[in-house]
Amino acid sequence: MPKQSSGFDDKMSPQERRTAYSLAAIYMVRMLGLFMILPVFTMYGAELKGHTPFLVGLALGIYGLSQASFQILLGKLSDTIGRKPVILGALTLFILGSVVAALSHTIVGVIIGRALQGAGAMSSTVLALAADLTREQHRTKIMATIGVTIGIAFTLGMVLGPVLNSLIGVGGIFWTTAALGTVAMGIVIGVVPAPRSHLHHRDIGVETASFGKVLGNPELLRIDLGIFIMQFVLTSNFVALPVVLAHTTHIATNESWKLYLPIMVLAFMAMIPFIIIAEQKRKMRQILLGAITVLGLASLADIYVDRSLVAMAINLLCFFTAFSVLEATLPSLVAKVAPVSQKGTAMGAYSTSQFLGVFAGGTVGGILKGIWGVNGDFLACACLALLWLSVARKMPEPRYLSSYVLPIDAADPKAAQALQASLAAIRGVAEVAVVEDERAAYLKIDRAVVDEAELLAFARSSGEAFAAGS
Image (cartoon, rainbow, N blue to C red; front, side, top):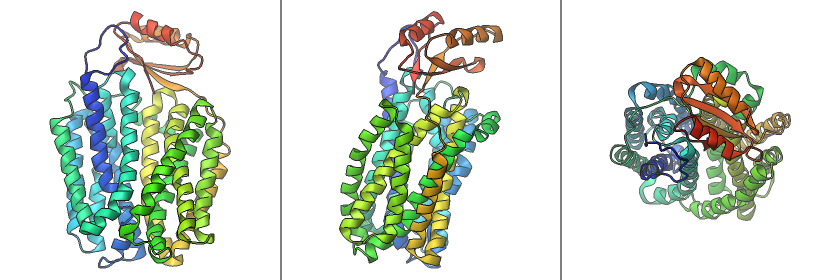
């Protein structure tokens, strides 16, 4: 871990910059391989031996089930044996799954390969490694860098998938994915710094003892339901959408990138003002409800509006703009709603719900397509969005609080209690939890009210301490 100085340093060290860019690159190359499959797999799966609509949907979504099953387990394992061994093991499974899928000529073989890809669940471990290698005041910047690369990978995947499909086919895309996994392994071995220790970080890692409290929190459950439905809608759409584009608007799968590229760029640009309004103008509840409504209407429009190229392009732009807004808003909501000492556990439950939504969207979407055709998928997505809207309407306006971490040195429980009381007395501090064994104080603050200089003064007076916002 970088050596800490006695002053508050607002600049990342060379090692921290190296950590940010190398871990973001690992996320980038791994997620790119997964996203490239989305716009082309449905048509490819329909040509595989033994295929049915259900099995094609299962092949698309099974990745989410294995990801949900292993991500928390591997994250906990990394606390014991180290981050890099777990990440390298996860990438090995990911590469193996890609090779199995590339070599398979049956739908069952591809399902096995996709399940192996998902079993290489390393997301929580990568975030824990980022926390091990960086100081608290820079952790948010690094997490944001990783988050941005995922969005870039999604956009690139939507464009590169059809292009590569025209050149090397879906089997070639799976081989490319295996190659990208190998590149990620090289980055882990040769570029990512080695941590001196692997500590548990309550703001990132999962606390098993806190699961009951997190799952019993109605506000967090509302958000978990939301991310489940959002991922269901996205995956189910990609069970049906390639068929509609190919058979109704007559856009060949290999040419669909010409539609996706401008739409994804415009959706990203359209998202930005809504996020600014949500965070800076403190209108998150209104923006959230509006985006859910648009997501549902876009799914409904897929059934009833003219499926001309112009109509589909406008509808897809609305859909991906709403999706992008929700994708950026929901994690922020988790951070605002979760109790200060349970943020990591809340994010673990959120991620699990996200991956289960991928699995359900592919599997149920395949079943519905087999029974009622593509309209069955779109109608299910619209109904789920309506359910989400009815649940989200009960959400109170969130408290606009930011996470803040102070490294502290509490010698005993009595000292920890004294520190907690002192921090709680600072104006603008809404919640405090001092964790002795982690030598950290986890806070929630209102940045519009808090005197940050007072927090920094407290940090300096408590020893070599730094503060971080997220």
